[in-house]
Length: 605
Image 1 (cartoon, rainbow, N blue to C red):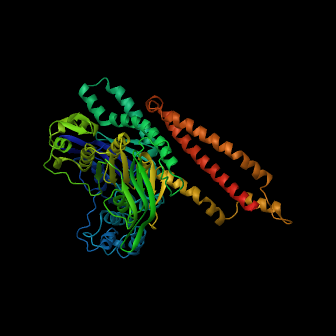
Image 2: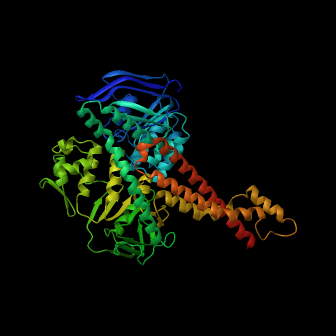
């Protein structure tokens, strides 16, 4: 690695008697793109503040290369003291560059910020975008980003990814957004029990590497004291075990998507009759030709959908597109301007909204889970002892009487999820459930939703979460339309790309092969069919595509083996890369088939 621009040497920091950072060593190079990973409570945000110089460690040294500018984005921005969001953004400029306010103008436009809004009147999302602009405006050599995608919609997250891909400096990121980390991180920092381990590879390789390290450490720990070994198991092994179980759940999700796909006649149209493979045979929600406008703007128009028991529906779109409004119309909280919504019978609904119903500070963890009624949590017909239920949500039983006021933000979110899932329900409605969740809690939420036996409707901007949870996606582009696509976010993008391919073909310049076809046909008459070479390629593409699909299916079957993580981590990592390459090749072959079919139609027409 090149000479570092910032180093931490022998850093010590404690919370009470417990070490948070224990003789920690960290060096950041001028082109590093690092994701900082660790379980909830490991001290990730604290470490980021130490790197930023906002917390003074009890021991050790923080060194910064002279002339290096460091900018820090906190989880909870504070714009108090500024008259407007514009002033807050401009405040991020270096002292000697305060006159270069044009930088603020560019970021305000790109991030869709109401620059004249006061900090008190701004929404959480707008304040977050303003804080992001303030962090970027000074063009620092080192960016420190703590959950940068929180409260951002998908469009802004993608803008941020594109912006950071061209960033010339270094960055350290804490994020629960796997897609964001996959697209940006080139190395990983794992903060575990006060120490840093570094992986010189992207986030996509982290989990396999982490499992390997855990397995090696567990073997070494056999020789140590039982108490130490149990503490180690608590801190790391639970994550690995949950990930292994999730492989089977993902396979079940794919099966559910196939069922949902069979129920969708075509893009944007839903089968009104029950599909033959429908397990329940009962309707949860049926909306026909519904429309809704707000303040003179159409949010959605003439939208129809039938949601059956067991469906997992995601609602996707930019902020202001009307996602929450559509959700409220579907569950009967709002009347549509036109059309009808029929709600199924015998529904018991649990709603977790964006604002999250506040837990009382003087309530204990146990009381929040049991409702203050005894020692058992009742989930449907099943009663679980509160201590067992606590452990499922990553709480230690000895913390049963801990007051809510003493919990961290991540722990409060976990407790809120646990208490809501303890309520009897067969319809779960979640509006932005991943906001402010750490990665451990997000993993847990995915696991609980995978086991949920009822129907799920959720609004989310987290692309990976949508891919892992939903069977069908309602996409609102912000132009007054709502269209249903089978599958998650990635499925929606793939289907949209395929449906747009013919239009793109008409607009783009001819490829060299297409030009050869024209030359072969000139000058006497226009070609009425493909050239021999292109026709032969077209004839062979279906078999080639089928072979690629078979190969991908075989590799996915192998990688879904839960034992593969621990038995052969190198094979797992290799398979991950092979599957990605095979999918890219499949996309290229399918696009070539579309090009040749389109050309064939044009020539014959």
